[in-house]
Image (cartoon, rainbow, N blue to C red; front, side, top):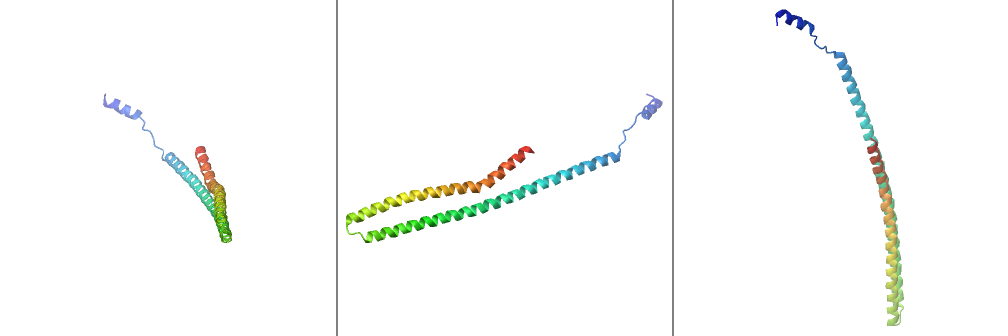
Length: 152
């Protein structure tokens, strides 16, 4: 190639131009989108934290009330057992024969076993209800979070 052809070729080639204003606009759009996404993520995080706090507070209050209920049941059972024991001692003190003592003791033990079984059933019912009541808010919150996660 000659120098003139090379010069003509170089004159016909155009270098692509770089428009700085377009790049700035694109960068601004990208930055604004990033800020918007950050705000959305923060809002979701804040909402999740508030919901978790409410769930914990609800669970705590439920646990406290259930603990009170269990404590009252335990006190009632202790009172019943103590009264039965004192009544049995009074009856034994009034017994006149060995056969009467054996009969009182047998009757007392049978009554204690039956009462213990009944008290255990009551405690089990209260404890089951307590476990369900305490875990319900956590379970509900977990299911909601899982549903929100699937929706996202």
